[in-house]
Image (cartoon, helix red, strand yellow):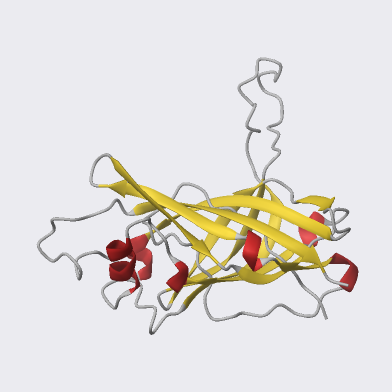
Length: 226
């Protein structure tokens, strides 16, 4: 049995809540040991940012990400990821704001403790590569891409939606202790409204608001299962 670490990083996004959280531990089927990885919670996190009003940026981090990933560099399309994010770990550098966001007025961590992500598909991103503007790419040539898309079900605040996480292929390396590690970063964008999240409960007078779109960046570090 083995399935391991996930590598997502979520991009452009929606609302602070973009926490790309993965809730209710969806488990993956048994995976082959040699290609299975376990997410290292101490070195994995989810960063999010959005706009507060028209200009001020609001950002924060969720730590303690856990889960499993199956990844074989020879067969990347067979990759699978399952990840869980504890919402109570949110940190925006303002304690009062963190407490408000964890309350029933927003995330309601007492009822919805985690956010969760379970992948359903992994493949090359359609369209041009990041360097497609380079003049060396001839007009009319077939678009190329060096990016991949991890599609899956993201559950937050009791609501599940399909999201696409844009990322590069995971990197494999051996750490100073001789342990095999997998690292990956991905990004996605979410809309707080899609998950029944709004600041109106906390600020009914409308004095505080944030843009619906929240960008989420996920950094995953995983250890190979033995």
